[in-house]
Length: 339
Image 1 (tube, rainbow, N blue to C red):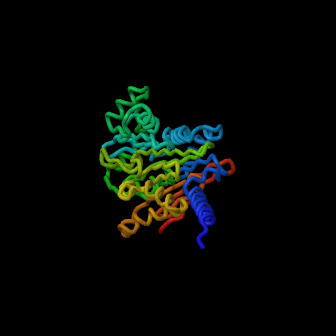
Image 2: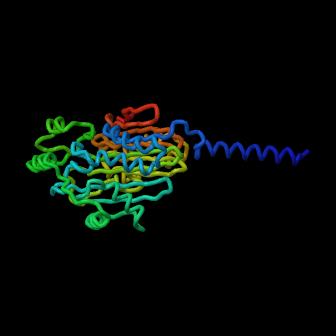
Image 3: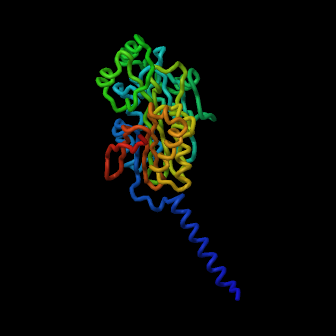
């Protein structure tokens, strides 16, 4: 005999169970035990994480942390893939790209920006002071100068010498994992053809309040065609943040990341239930399966963090590293790879 009271009771229990399951999978903020946390790409991410940690450890906002963190490699003339000291395009221009995104999906980006050491701060100002998301080239420079940024020569003597050595052959062949090579080893391996880099620093942070933000900044491919833009300043490609799910960033040959809207794809895989490392692997698989032969000649890596602090990475070629900073650890890890 149909019992209405028992039916209603079981229906409520079932609904509650599914709600609890969805809460654990999608918005597990009550489970966060290791916040705050900041992660970033490559070995130089460790120093960048230290800058971000200065903000996070004082209960600062994730957005402030990622900006402060990536400004450290932007200002380091010994790093030839980011900011001041970045290698120029084939015409000798150092052009910078950057983007930033917060927990509310606010975002800003600059592309092909010259003469400004900290493009990430200009990107944030685009986000906060304009109705736009992206400013490029001369317009981005005019905006920066009008808002108090200083015009500077970004082509260091070392980078200029490397570019002039490259001009002797103008051979264009990216070197995998060049981010983790010293200037001496770069010269030994690639001169006179010159080194070729493929980004970038991408940083993701989770603050004490359970909110996430991300930043990505680069000088792009060395000796690229003037005007070339990769994935780093493209929201959804080089960086994506969804506070209800997680965040992701990428490094490597940007053209391949753009083809699959890589960072957005990683976040969507996490939304579907994949843990961060698995989500990154699925995105890499998309690239590899599209052109397996080409994939053997290039590097792309993804780094992701779920909004409960769980993080992971995956790349095409062995050698991609990422840095992690929490209240209990400050380490560099090597990512798992497809090949």
